[in-house]
Amino acid sequence: SEEITKIMQIAEERFKKLLVDKRVHKNKVHVKVIGRTNLLPDSLQKIIAKVEKATEHYDNYIWNFAFAYGGRAEIVDAAKKLATEIKENRLQIDDITENTFEKYLYTAHMTKQDPDMIIRTSGEERLSGFLLWQAAYSELLFLDVYWPDFRFIDLLRAIRTYQHRKRRFGK
Image 1 (cartoon, rainbow, N blue to C red):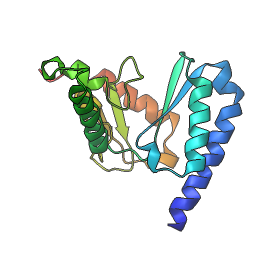
Image 2: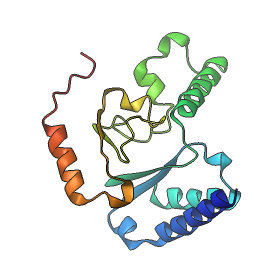
Image 3: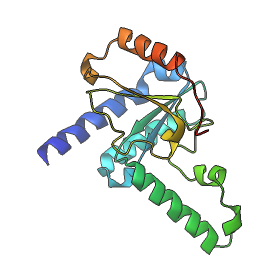
Image 4: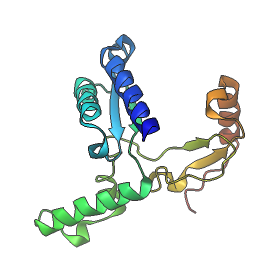
């Protein structure tokens, strides 16, 4: 619990810095936190809300932070929202399609929700619940390098690998 408390304190400090970061505002970066933010400490929730509000109209870039995030939880939360819409007669069961479902995911604020490529560092060859719905047709790259040691050359190699892949999107 001490480690989690410290992580939350660091996150709060970093979001406070983001709120006044000139680069965020100059480059019109929309900052969004995806996940069950209601599970976070109140003080962190408040600063996240301030950062999101201050950048909500920016549209040059989107910077997503996954916090209290789980892919299964995201799908369950989307299903609950859909069920509520149906229960309150704002949506019919036959209206539910993949496109409709995507509108209820944490990433609904993004015009393109599906990542073209996901890079997993540390040598692990699994998604660990990350963007389960969105990653369906993503190209996955697994690198033996740990995140703190990930270099620009590693990114360039990943892009080169991606460029040589033939995307079939499930076909």
